[in-house]
Length: 158
Image (cartoon, rainbow, N blue to C red):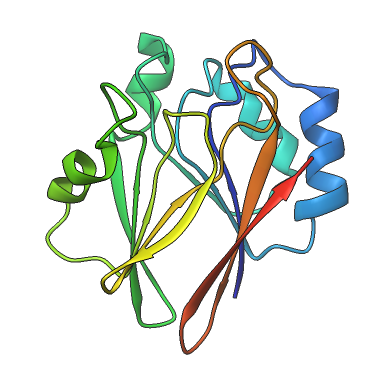
């Protein structure tokens, strides 16, 4: 299974730029994950009817928080994948967010705007960075998870 992963888009609605990113890099994905800070629920319209799982982030307004959970646990191909935004200072974020789940094989998160694809013990910590935000983000990135017998992540600069 091929899973497209985004976070921290910080958009005020539908975005042509995000639609272009979807068409170029994510249109062949079986599932899209968004790890929060959409800032507008219409951001999800860019994914053209693909299955999407998303959580809210600290910058999401009440309208988004009413529609999305703060965390999500998915079972994909026999693997447990946790989806959460994150909070607080970037340093040590992985230690804080892993406590939100009992046991996962992969933890997808956002908040830091810095891409990460790191296996720690038996858990893949995967942060796609920010696809579209430009103020706090040096390079815009997204992620792809290939899930089969194992989970492999790839960060793509867009």
